[in-house]
Length: 71
Picture (cartoon, rainbow, N blue to C red):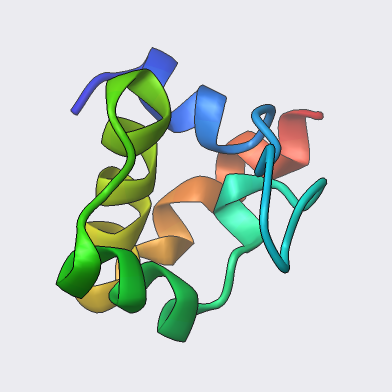
């Protein structure tokens, strides 16, 4: 996990679906878990969704708070 990946979680928005336009960092856990079960999309979006799911699943969402405060 690199700082630039964490920063992207706070800048990239979901490009499709029920949560279109919402920051990846703000997606609900049940939605991230659905992707984990069904498969993440290809490319960088899928990697970021997988990272956010790991953070959420392991209770590490607080790691994003210092970055949120910088914005």
